[in-house]
Length: 454
Image 1 (cartoon, rainbow, N blue to C red):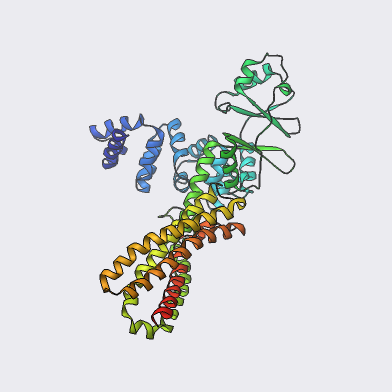
Image 2: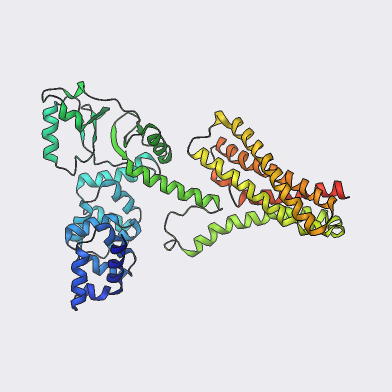
């Protein structure tokens, strides 16, 4: 991989010479580029300026350009296709799977969409239009529709002959799905079963039932989790009448989990997930999406100021309260975020469910008490070392104990409650939880100090 990176870096630095082949170095680098993996060539193109990667892509041999095009992000595909000649664009589009084309078309304008749909064969065009009618985050929007199906009345011999005629591009799936004459899903058959059974064996006698069937409107994340649970590499997708429509594969599961993981990261830090990349998202949209959360949290955070203003006389009298305020609030926020992160992950992986909520909360309670005692011991020593006042150290330590326990319990409880109401638990993580704990921490701290210090 390191060698490949060095080669691509050298080509990138001499890209103009590679495109024109006016120098010996340019010709050598061009020949080297042609033997690189198409995924590496796509990565190189994505780092170039638009005019450069268009020029370089047009120089690629047709077969290689098709493979490279499939590896480019959909937004770059949309830009590139508009710079290609119509015949070149048609050949590329006709060699793309229907599900990839539907993703690509999402990044085209209505005018360009109509233009390039005309380049496709009628059958393939109808597949794309059908896919575009589904929610892109549903099983119907994610599935591969150009998958071979077999009929239950076929014999093993007829199935093998059919697969041989279609060629490897259509038969590279180990599990093939079986329907009746009306397209109703019956089950599946594997290649090894076709090989070991006698040619005259009816397919209906060796069909296996599907462990998992996805419906077109099912959420993609639910299907991905179920496929992991049952350990299947593909899942058939059907409509409400059980007509076979397509397949979701293990590669799709990987992409779904990556997308959902990215969304959870966005939500955990108070961001609205963006459909496009960072640089392709307009700056005004980033300002708007991020500003909504920040303004909301700013207003919510003002409650801390109100609490402090109510206890201003006490704080002026005991300045040590203000000195250690940020230490206590920060510790509470950190403890709560730890708990929330563990629970959010547990809910995502289904390790934590509604059935074991009580067990989770009791476990977090015991952990919070143990951690609180540990932090109190350190905090007491820290405060006493600073002020040499046992009463102040004790009051601050008691506040720390209550803040840590409250933070951890809330960190576990809030994600569980959000999940209960079908809201993504990731919303409960920082900075939302940190802001809530700031307010509660200030309230607990001031209340304890007012009662014990007067």
